[in-house]
Image (cartoon, rainbow, N blue to C red; front, side, top):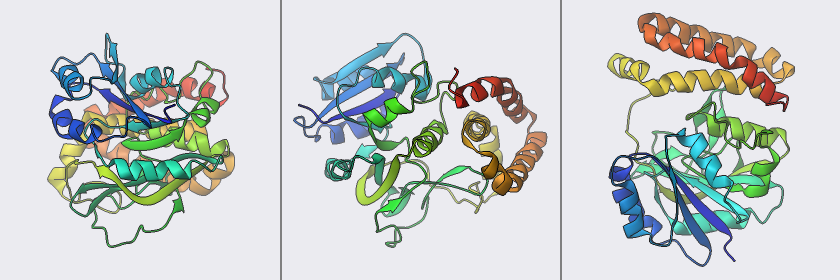
Length: 309
């Protein structure tokens, strides 16, 4: 019987899949099955998957349901006790994933992740930690690995790029309509929200210092606040639609999960970050759409917080 489902959501991902599919061919088929949920790709994503992984379970969706919606449809098909959520551009190392599975022998652990690299020894993620403003940030992102993340550690979240979950833990924190990832988020911060819900329910989240793959997102110089260090880089980030989603979903994550005590302690940092982002919205007014979307979605977030949506 398979222990693990490896699950990818694709959308016009052919360029990334050409690099990542050869690594999935090395997965032990006696332990893991692979599922690909395609969000109505217009390129040859599915043809590549079918050629490289003929036994993969392929789910074709008629429209783009986002990262969250796609994975939720996959979760509903899962029959294995564990599921690995994997970005289509991650070049996975099966030995690291197999090592992570051993840590799920502890029934208190709801999710675990290893170490992802961008290239060489540049770290992409060694787990997700919440800042003082409750913004989820990847530990070690963009810096050289000098052994600073060489111990097993509790973390605030696991990155959606390569996260290994216990299926029963996901089902335990699903919203009443069966959403595991919040589909209103569409993409970005949905992994932070899910991790927070898991921790609120008492599940442990672990980082294990094993290499699980390469996630070749762009190398960039960042400030301590997580924004590009250069003015040109900041301007590009501000204009990126993903920034709008990220900011909106950050606000929704707080509304859904923070307690009154959390707000007493972290409120000043949250307000300061909000003011900075409001100022940036003045520089590039389309970014202000994040505010209107966040406000419009607040009733739904409050309902989900109280288990009534």
